[in-house]
Length: 536
Image 1 (spheres, rainbow, N blue to C red):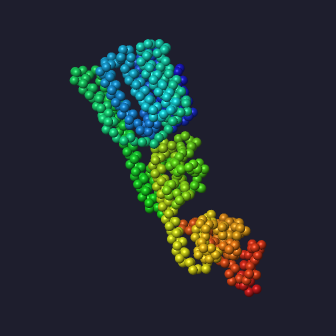
Image 2: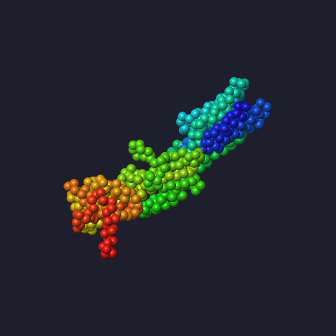
Image 3: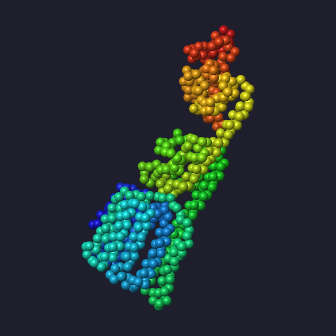
């Protein structure tokens, strides 16, 4: 009954908490069911079938832990664990052959069960160390301790009390699946390959060589009495070695793919001349780096105003993080935001932006570092393009300044926020000022009564003309006709070009309208022009 309840608890915990990988937990539920079946068969005096169920339990637990500790899972890099397990397996083989002997028991204790329980405890203890404070991992360790205690105490002191270890196993593993912390055990993590060290390679080599050496020693004595155990130990160490090499080859292949993709992306980004070219290069790199079915959508926004509130960096002090997550309704999917922000060059492109990917959480986690590098290279390309355009605008301003230096026309280039970027020398002569204040806006030069009219004109799109009064340095006013062109979409200008003409020059002061009639000025000009054209 405890075994059935524990199995049901694990299945219910998987359905309730929806971990990233349900396979390890279902294998764990199968192991509990196999152990419960072994207990029933033992009570029915079927020891042979019971042993099969108990061996199946250890096999299912081994498969479950293999899934939990694979590359990209909780241990991030399981190379050291595999080396230690291979060495422990070869060491236990030596203990079995030369200490336990042909009987397969230490007194009444089954050596096979104890060896399996020790290996199980070693793996779950290593997992607890890797994950830190996690109640589900601690309960798994408690269940493994219960198995070891039960395998030792039950043969020595049969009875209800000696079976308490298996009771702890059922209760602890069922509770481990019910606690919400079980989700952390299957959360994907970016693999971090460990550096090569000779002592670990020597340890793995000794582990692989131990079974043949034990077989050679027994063969030299004339009889091989532990051939099955040697074969099983040799198969386990060989399997662990193949797993170790497979992990290394997989990590190396992924590193080569990332390196090739980033190298090609860097070449494309260096050659990009505008924002669409950068967008195309980034999308091509993502298509090469990521599996096609792992990404739902990709957004490349070059301005923070194009982002949702969750994707905008926080206002905390310091540089924003290299990336962050946005939760998704589907636990298997997530949104990764990589800001297009390089702190040293922030002044070149203060608009920000971000690379936003929606896809499978495990794939995004495994390639998070690569995507951060790709976003940084894209930000560098955008900053370079912004600086090149700024230099081009500066050279254009210098050329324009040289051409119209002695012209009577007043030319002003303003940004979208009406901040003056360039003003011809004629404006300073008209205002009677030696120079304009730093970061001056057009509002600062216009009479307060005309500022609202000017703001409305620049707030709309398209070209037009307005009449307004400028404030001179001596406090007087001068009426000008300002004709503006909306060139905000132009790659080199990105602003308004305003041409001003002194409306009072060459006119009789009596012909000029008073301020209260200033709104009717364009109509009067049009009527006078029509009368002159048609001579009436």
